[in-house]
Image (cartoon, rainbow, N blue to C red; front, side, top):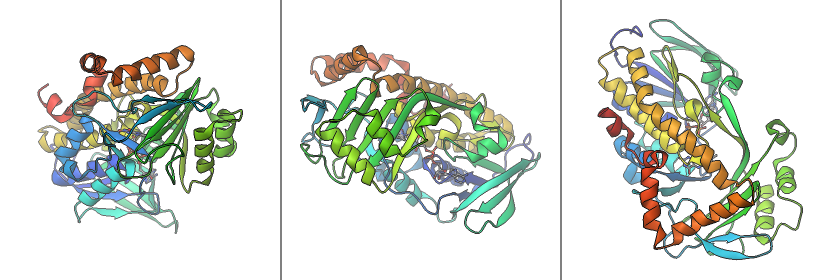
Length: 415
Ligand SMILES: Cc1cc2nc3c(=O)[nH]c(=O)nc-3n(C[C@H](O)[C@H](O)[C@H](O)COP(=O)(O)OP(=O)(O)OC[C@H]3O[C@@H](n4cnc5c(N)ncnc54)[C@H](O)[C@@H]3O)c2cc1C
C-alpha cells in the first residue's frame, strides 16, 4: 500500500498500552486493521490516579462500545467536599469536577478506563509487554520497526503498514520519527505528585473530599463512591530540572513547608512517603504542527498532551483513537489524505483542551491571594442553587467548556 494510494487495511503497530493506544487498537481492528500493541512496561498498570471522563470521552467510549462497562465512581449525595487550611479550619465546598455540565463528568481511576479498554480488546490483537521500538524507518509502502525486548535485549525487525505512537508524554516514537523531546515539550512551570491513599484521611468520611489551596501550592484529596481516595499535590516551580535532583518526598516536604503542615497535609505527606507507587512529574504540554509523518501517526499525550489541568487527556485520547479509525475506514483518498483529514477534525478540540489546561493550572494552583479568592468565588457559585444554573449557561457559552462535552466524531462529520 503506497501512502498516496487508496487505503487497504493491513498490519498496524500500536506503541503503548495506555488509554489512547487501546482505544486506537479497538477502533482500527473494527475497521479491518490487524493491530499489534507493544508496551515497554512488564505488564499492564492497574489503578492509578483520579480521572474525570467528560462528555467527549463518554461519546468516544460509546462509539467504541465500552461506555456501559466504564465504572462511575462519582460519590453520591452523602459525600461532601471541604476547603481546609493548615490551621484546622474547614468549610463546605464542591468537588473540583462538580461542574454543571451535561452530561456530567464520570469520576474514575485511570485504571478503570484502562481495564475497560483492555477487556474490550479483541482476542486476536496481540499485546507484547517489555517491548520498545528502537529504530523506525519507512518507505512508500511500509514501516520497518526494530523492536527490542527490554529484558533480554533481543531485537527483531518487523514491517507494518501503519505505526501509531500512543506512548505518552515522552514518546519514543515521536523522538525516533519527529525529533527530540525539547522540540515539542512545553513545561507549564508546575509539578504534580499523585498517588493512591491507603486510608481515608482523619476527619473525612469515606466519600468526602478535601482541598487545601495556598499561594503556589495545593493538595486535593479526591473521593470515590466505592474506593479509597487518591491525592494530588500541585505546585509552581521556576526550575523543573532541579525538581528531579532529590527525593520527591523530601521535595514535597520542602515545598509545602515550613511545618507545621496542619493535620491533613501532614497525614497525606506521610502517606506519600509510604506509597508503593507514585507519580511525580512536571505538568507539560506537547505542541506539534503535525501529528503524522508518512505512515507514522501520534495519538493522545504523545501528540497533544493537554495536562491534567484540562481534565481532557484521557477523553481526548479515546476520542482521537476512535476518530482515527473512523477516518481511515471511511476515507476514499490516500493514507496521507486520511491522516491530514483526521488532524483537521481533531485539532480544534485539542487546541481548546490545551487552552483549558492553561486556565485550569491557575485554578488548581492559584498564584496569589487574589487568585485563591477568585477560585473560592467560583466554587461558591457552583454550590449556590441560584447561581449554578447561571454558571451552567455561562460555561455552555465558553467554547472550551462546550468542546469538553462534544461528540467529536459526530460534530466534525458534518463539517
Ligand atoms: C494526576 C493526573 C490526573 C489526571 N486527570 C485527568 C482527568 O481528570 N481527565 C482526563 O481526561 N485526563 C486526566 N489526566 C490525563 C490522562 O491520564 C492522560 O492524558 C492519559 O492517561 C494519557 O493516555 P495515553 O495513552 O495517551 O498515554 P499514557 O497514559 O502515558 O500511556 C502511554 C503508554 O505507553 C507506554 N510506553 C511509553 N514509552 C514506551 C515505549 N518506548 N515503548 C512501549 N511502550 C511505551 C507507557 O508505559 C504507557 O503504558 C490526568 C493525568 C494525571 C497525571
